[in-house]
Amino acid sequence: MSEKTNEGMAKRAQHPEKSGKRSLRGIKIRTMNYVMIFVSIVLYIVLIWVTAYASRKYDDMVSATDAYIRYQEKASLVKEGSDYLTEQVRLYGVEMNLAYVENYFREVYEVRSRDKALEALRENEVEGSALDFLQSALDNSNKLMEREIYAMKLVAEAKGQDMSAFPDVEEVDLKQADKELSSEKMLEKARELVFGISYQETKGAIENNISYFLSSVRDDMRKNQQDSAAGLKQVMANQKVLISILFVETILTFVLILCLIVKPLHIYVNNIKEEKRLDIVGAYEFKYLALTYNDIYELNAANEVMLRNQAENLRREAEHDPLTGIANRRAFDDWKTLLKTKISPMALLIVDVDQFKQVNDKHGHEMGDRILKKVAGLLEETFRDTDIAARIGGDEFAVIVVDITKDMKEVVRDKINNINNELLNPSEDLPRTSLSVGGAFSQSGFEDDLYKRADEALYAVKENGRCGCRFYGE
Image 1: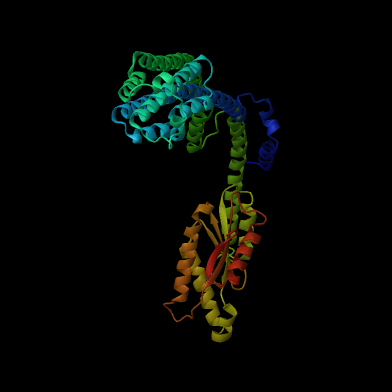
Image 2: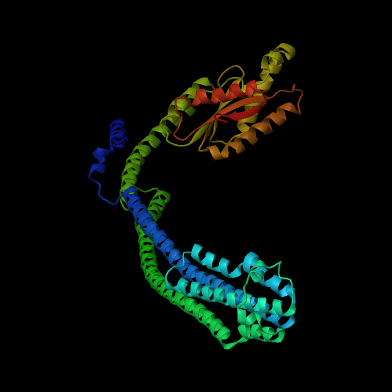
């Protein structure tokens, strides 16, 4: 393939608009994502709002039920308080025990179950006719108190009991006719006051008022529950619609992903496995990628021919280091230039023999040469045939490891550790030594700063005690 052909391919790869990319048409994945994300966000916000509204409607139903239970409890307290007063005054009229009088007034002034129940209902904002019914029940109960206290006064007078501890009874002024009654008649009249028909009618009125109150509250509760149930039903219908829309949107998203992304990827993988040009299919980005790949594919084919020719020239020239037998600095530089045009991942290792000058000074240059040969042999044995090991200085070596990525750094580190283990434990009559190694990775051939990065990593190893391997960026 001629140089002009290579130059033409390179220009097309550098100027994609001349390769037909400017006229590309198709759905852009980014635009599709934005639209789907926007639609999903809107639907989810509406769904959350509808769900929150449903929750409020449900809470309204529960609150209405709870309120009715509370109102029922408070109404019961009014009735129970009134019944308790009736019970105590009747017991006093029968047994004439002042303890019942004490219980009676403790309920009236301390416990105050009837008054507290009504106050609690007012605090709960119960208004209107419902509360009027309960207020009437309390008023009737208070009217009965006048009769009950008068009855207690009659009993106390009949039995000659001291009522100074109970001012409400003590201060009651009996009617003149009642004062003239005998003790038995006084007791009889007292019992008539709290057991008679008139008394029972008033008690019945209290119960009726409480029943009217509960009936009114119950009607309000039912109305609230019906309103909440209707709203909840409508909300659930809206939820079904929104969920259906979300389901359709999800299916549509999967279909678009399948047609625009998954299927083109499958086609591209097969094309790459078969080392063919990519078909122009899928979303806009995939079509653009296919055209770019095809341009690079053509350029790479031309570069491969050039690389093979240059490799043959390098092998013919046999530029090897005369001492160690591995590639020398010139060969290393040629490989470096060659690999700058090769778009593939690789790594560069710069290797220094630790304390090499001291070995020369102590054991002589012949021993130093043997160590250099040993190091060169270990590097060639340890690394692959496709990797390039070279001596680039006195005691400095370099290894170009091709087709390797950062996730394989531990493999390289293990290789260096094995070499150091053998150098530190020599089986021959060699002195102990070790290697300091700095490495750097590249994703696109021999980059301009690759050597500098590897050298910085080597410097870091030397600064931290030598005898080890470190990669740039660690």
